[in-house]
Length: 214
Image (tube, rainbow, N blue to C red; front, side, top):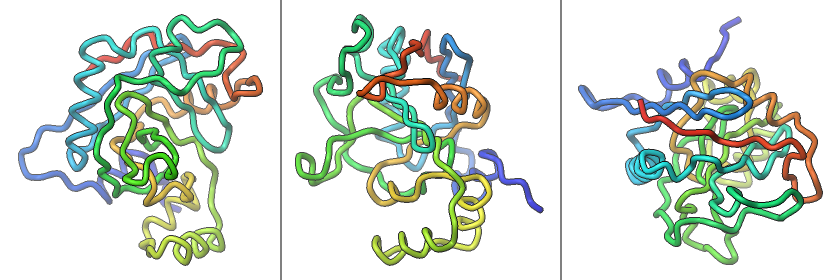
């Protein structure tokens, strides 16, 4: 059986233009480090993430929203000094990013958070908040349902990835995926398993120490 990894996902789905430089980032936390590849196919999101990370914007921010089998979310500047129990998730740099929606939400997908459709019909992304998909392995019946409800069609390779690697296909066509985890999925698994409060905020703080662009 073929073992699908985030690196293989890149090889299958994200063919880069000849000679175009690839951008990577290492997200260091008090739990461990996660290395991500940023997609050249989403230049607005890639460049914004690089800018904020290079300025130290994400330093000391929390993964403030954690939901196992769904995702882990960070990037709210209000989380830097927020006391335990404070609800988070509304902060940002006071701008949004036009959508660049394309890639599926496999496990390890780096995706931009955003406000709900009723407040954000254009599906523009938050200027700073992002999430990493945790997800779960999918069945063909659920993927069939996604195709019917969203008017899309998964390739055989995409179906295999969702079934073996896992992910959260309900988000497909809804949010911009602008990168993927290539090292450190075990750290994502650990964070996703933490106990949380009523706002899905981890009771044990998971704090970004820095993000280094590689």
